[in-house]
Length: 320
Length: 191
Image 1 (cartoon, chains in turn green, blue):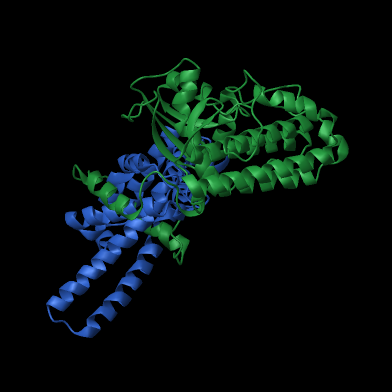
Image 2 (spheres, one colour):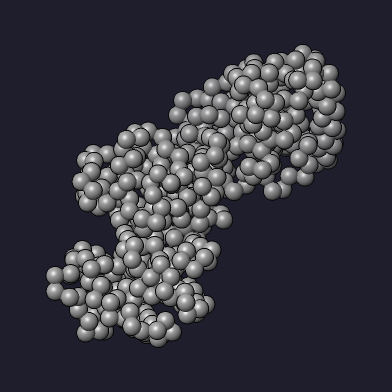
């Protein structure tokens, strides 16, 4: 192996072999502290935490992320034959069809648009804190609607939502605080959570109609992986498995991945990592969306394995 | 997993470097720091040069981890190639500096370059000849490790031998090569 400009791999290999022969038997330890200088020099050339090279991605905001994801779903829906709308779609609700998934997304769009003053739709009483339950009445109402009509209703609702979030971002900024299904979060986070949901249900539909899965681009995965990792303490808290004083080093590989030292209890600063988890970023996002089980996640783990098991079991915070 | 992050140690380290895990750089240094430092020190004959070049080699790995092509070799091989090249560059730069200090003629650099290139060719030929004299088992291990870029683990797998045996076989091969190439010739290789 040689850098890109190497003229002759064999000569390079011979050079390395020659150097090894020359130094054979001479065990030379570098001076103590050399690693500090290496890290200082290296980090001055490339900052930590973000991928580089082929894994680097252009930066986009949540509005663009959601717009791209909605466009992906539109393409999938455009290709559906009428019988496909009635196929079963694997979601958190095992009885849903493809049409039900789309109706669920319509209800979600109307809820978000309502939050932002662009729709008069409000969740049924008693479902305000459950983003799945709040959509059930509309799903049932829309079961009498043909797929092509449902496609049009969804396109309209998604368009209204995209316009509403773009307007809200322009007027109040991405850091404005909102409440989504009872949870406090910023508009920026809401848009990524919604990206997660639309992408996840697009994959549900792809699975139902035997289309190959297509991960989001690296720009979207950058936003999604950030939210998925930062949400780990929430998932652990919901599962009743918070770990005060513990920190995980999470390395997600591929375009849109990155590296985090993530505390495993809400509100705590990161400490020295107790474990290292290395996994593919798309796999990790599917784990966060409960479309991949912790057991089936290919990953490399070093450190506290019991802690890792808890972390992965609680990572599915975007169940739908 | 896509991206190969669950493969061998090298694959995991490389994936971590690419994903921005600076702790992986410290881990790579812990494994290969002595190798790179020793190689540069031997070629350059200077502890200060060894420190400077070692820093630069690992910083280069951090900055451009996609330059490492796992299909062509290991992280160790990559570091060895970069370290050797930069050590030679350092020696040449130092030679030129000394030449300038001594007010040598401006043409002095050119014959040195030609002589070094010729020495490299002699060295390559000498190593090739020595390789031919190794026992077949040792020669095969060296070819896999240095010319096909295999790690210890991959050498062991390809030869169907335990990893420890692969390591000791390579150590023995290097020792034998060192014997085959006399000290005078070895010293002539250093630029």
